[in-house]
Length: 245
Image (cartoon, rainbow, N blue to C red; front, side, top):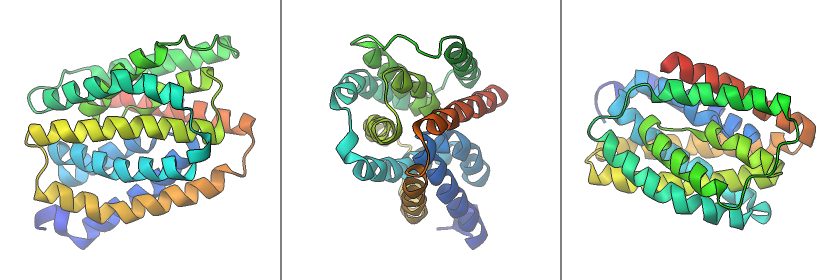
């Protein structure tokens, strides 16, 4: 590996960031990808950062699925996949050409509205049977273009009554389907190369370690505190997306 991506200092910074934000994702169920993308972009450049981020998220989400496998909500995962897989493929192919401008800003505004809505209606009506298919399509498309839109799905999982292990594991399973679909599209669009694959491999141990550490943390907080952490993460992610947009 050559250049900035090959320096020990660059890889050290990337590994520390991957560990810390994998821990955050394991505790809150999301957030690591949104915060990690600006770090990877600064270190590696955008066209390398997005697929490398996808590879690190692939390992992180797979480990969260395994650690929370007994609490997975399969009906939600199946309906999510019906929209997420084609959405992610379409977004990945679009990224190879010209991603639309202003999407981060729109997602950030959406998240702010959702946080306010949850404060106004603390007991929202559970999502309809096929709501997660629509959410999956939007999540797959946005994730392929932006690297991660995990906060987009959080309000819907909370409204469906998912907390702690059920929320973290099911959200991770949905994200895993998106990441696999994105990688297929990135490969077709020539965004995957030896440098990207090597960076993803090198950063995977830090991601797995952060996920394990986060699993130990989340078991020590109550459902009420967990929901507050997720809402705080939603607010932070919304502000970051608006600034980026």
